[in-house]
Image (cartoon, rainbow, N blue to C red; front, side, top):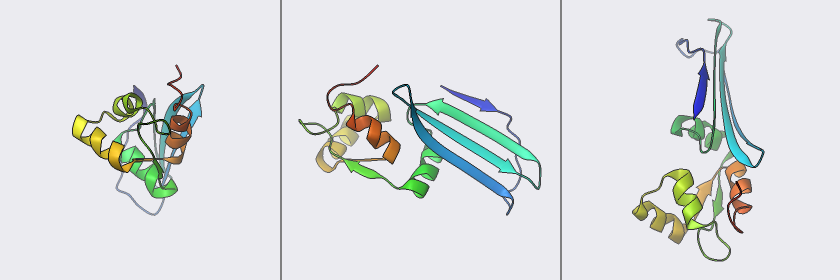
Length: 120
């Protein structure tokens, strides 16, 4: 579930600033998206838990890159966790099982800790 604070829109300009990040809070993945434009005095924030919406995750990936993680097996992230987190279909799950999962660095940190089982 995400919360949104003030949504006003302006055309993107040189004054527009985006800050998007993820962190682990109490063993859970959290994301934040902050937008500010000094020229039009616009400020909007959004935050949530879990994997962020695609447009937020795209910004994080563009800034920080990804880490390839093995999925399934004794050294991989559990299949159930990957399917639940990312909402993958069975064909998509087979694909990441075969080729690995591209996770953000923060997602990877949390998922690596789940190899021995998910934390609540």
